[in-house]
Length: 445
Image (tube, rainbow, N blue to C red; front, side, top):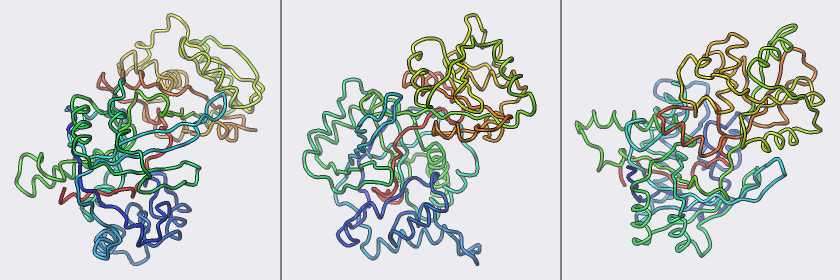
């Protein structure tokens, strides 16, 4: 199963660079827009954004571009002592204190993870299990970065099952003192980071995780890129086994999926646009074939989510609104609806009962849309913040919003172990795992 390996991480020399880790690290590359990129650039000349999401500049050429500049930063910062490699093989502990938004209001949580190397395996052929599909563009971008820098700067975020919390017990023996660094990000999340070098504790963690499959929560593109990069290096070096090669391992943050006190998985809601004149009424009528329809009014999107949460133990239920919350339709799947007959792609019952999949299947039937149209984010838009659903549909007569329950860990496990991938944007694990906390040298353990 999963092969875990401690490593000598590369970390910022905080004393030399001013001591504030928050000015040096960054959210993952795929959530960085132009405004955030500029803010990170302005915050510190050594911020990792210059590596993971560098700017394109006028005059860039085949030999001078954002990837060569990223490589120059990585090499130059090591040469100047701004980045230092740890002396001892380590597993790093990463804790995030945050407020989880629930229908009943904010709840304080702490998510504990370990940062370690994990042996790379092709997805679906070993113990590394995906739950989302990927797109070629981001993978090509990440591959160029790996080729030029020979490093990894952010972690794949994966889940393991440890109902007895054995890994956490080992962590607790090592993190009694102050962390290496601590900072609060722009969303109010407190990040803390420790280094574990005790051989007994490291060996204990390796042993506990040895027989565990790992479920990728976030970072599918980066993981698939690491497989491609490993394969390229193996061909170039004429080897058939990368078990003893640094590039044969990828850096991951591993979190216990059985830690309900630390995990927060938010739903990603949907808005269907461009329904045309009379389209909302037609959609309501079509969905009534598959759902029992209950009309209610709500004062806020939080109340809608609370109503959905209260029904989570029963048949799948979705909430649909147009214009405002004075008229919300609670849609409960009817007994006897044969989802397998509606699902032309032949997924499992576990997949079909996901809120995101159920909506995808029924919208496809009612609106006569193919899967590609349903998932590419144009006709059906993905919305992470419930209140934003209302902003998009407010005053419009050709669009409707759908509120969904979050995907549970049991649902994720059932789908993934059935060798399936969920519809796009089925999970939003909060908070994000930051980049630049520790870096991996792909040429040396």
